[in-house]
Image 1 (cartoon, rainbow, N blue to C red):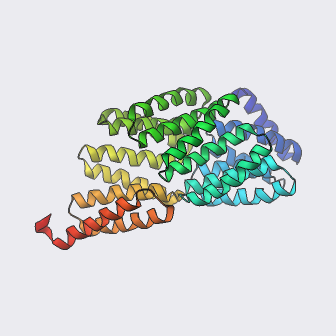
Image 2: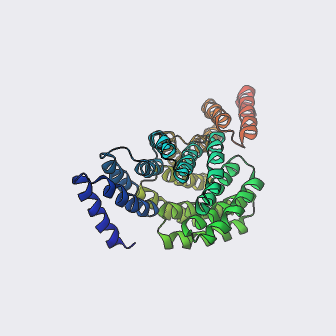
Image 3: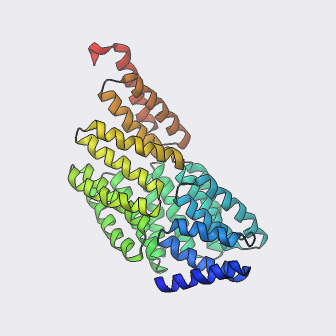
Length: 358
């Protein structure tokens, strides 16, 4: 659908809402929302969905509204939409729609760092999608389960799910989904320390994301390429990628993506020895991470802040941050829980031994 077509359909939707034409508004609204979500026009999806919902409850509009709210960092509001949509789907016997809604609820919990809850919803969605022979939906849920296992540190299982998802996405000609899975496979290899293979997957994903207009995915992949460059010690190149990603996250209103990018820029300056500037970026990121409820990412950023306080000799402040890190790690079953706890105990020991031991 061309941009001109979308604009015309958006006008048809406006007229249908004004004329109280419920069926037309819902059908056209769904078509327009699907395009706008792919193009990261989240605020527009929110506005259009609310207009449709003035004509009465509608599961499809609630699902699109929930997805857009999740992307702009309003997870609780997104969950409320999906939880309204789910009984409507079930009452109508809409199994495919039920699976989509269960998957979307899982995605919100995953973004919030509640991975066990996310898995529970994904594992409800997957058999329904298979029963309905929804291959594209099956691939989405397989990809999402892989993402949870990656977050839990089980990279072997994550890869197994991603490698199930990828051929289905290609078979379904789901270019957006294909790029997402390629990016996710790259992230697993990066976590395993195989930077060369990670870059190869990211560089497959990036042109597809640009081709299909997936701005959120593009920013995520630019972030990932920047992260690999930073790990390889090429901080100038890392900053170049992060500075491409940052305006995209702001343009599309992705608060979670913006927070990730700010944290990553902070890491670069930290590595360059400019702790003051690094701390400024970390603190910007923390505000957003708390706002969007991403506890796993908050733990990572707080750890970075703690290490700066430690470097400055502010051990009380470092310990306060590390205590929060360990508590967040416990809440989300973060794979760094043991190592973060060990760092906390080490810093406590440094403080007990006094300044002469520092």
